[in-house]
Length: 225
Image 1 (cartoon, one colour):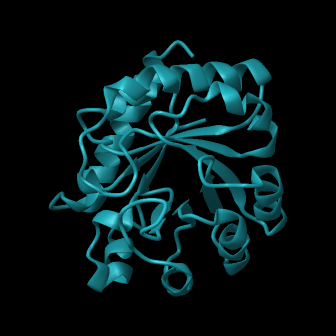
Image 2 (spheres, rainbow, N blue to C red):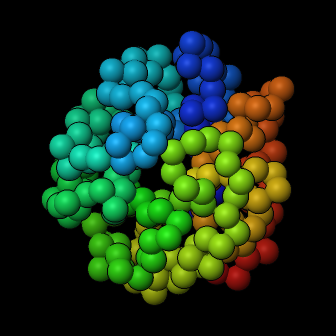
């Protein structure tokens, strides 16, 4: 699969979300929406009403990343609202299979997210229940953090597990993805890249997306996975 870029609006101007999403409308593949509840992570961002508003204004599909305490309760509603991808965290879900299936039933791609310290091997049997595996490359909760190189071996391991099961599961990385780190992520096996500060901290967000895509494509061509 060709690399996909999903700019995170966590780094956008919350007072001008619709405008900031429009700035990357012709260059990005997804709009990554970080939903945080100040319980699962120590930050409070936005929720379903803002997602519903974005769905009315954005031509890009929404990739909703739920960093919340009770994803089993809320995740299906994001899919029912119209989000095309909804990711829940393995550390928070109490009934992950049921919730992942509910997300799919509502018409969205189902994603499973894991924190930096969480091994991926324990979730191998769930790969058939998901469309995307999200590996956090920073501790979840805040944008602008430094990329954790310690996660790269886990990216490689996740790619091995996906390849070994011959499943069409996307492998997403989220946190500290920039021009300095995206090539390492792609070489390790990632194919969907969440970038916040690297996009919205640039003078031209659309051009930043294009640059990241070019780097990821070149690194993917050289990769051995």
